[in-house]
Length: 179
Image (cartoon, rainbow, N blue to C red):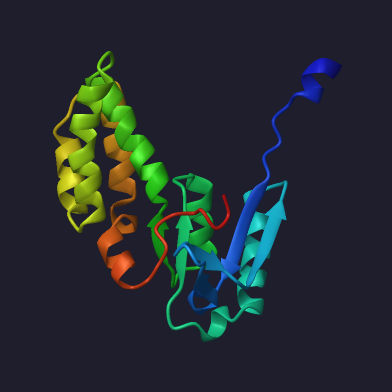
């Protein structure tokens, strides 16, 4: 009906493309991107991927020594990476990764926010400091519907969560540049 048509979800897909050497710091020390391109598309992921790839080529993809893609866990995004950016190192957005760990914490401690925080804080610390494999191993030992789903999520992104290495290389671990 007409009312349902008016409220149907139409997702915009958005990306920003920039070179790591096109970053600076504000007076407060906050990182800023000073030269970037944007791509937005409300349609199928394949066309969006083509457009992002074209923007990346325009900004020097063919000459890049290293390519990084920072994204959330959307399967369609990682399909674009596999199709269009095979040379890229993928980075799972840290904020999204932490949300998934918090989901497990809330399943384990549904009525106790402090207990949930006490459970999740060490995992977030390990995730940031090069112990991502241990976090994945810890998740694999848990039972529960949410824990099993999140374990699968982290298993799928094992190659995308070495945040310590990304930090050492000066690579953003968050998708704040587009958010």
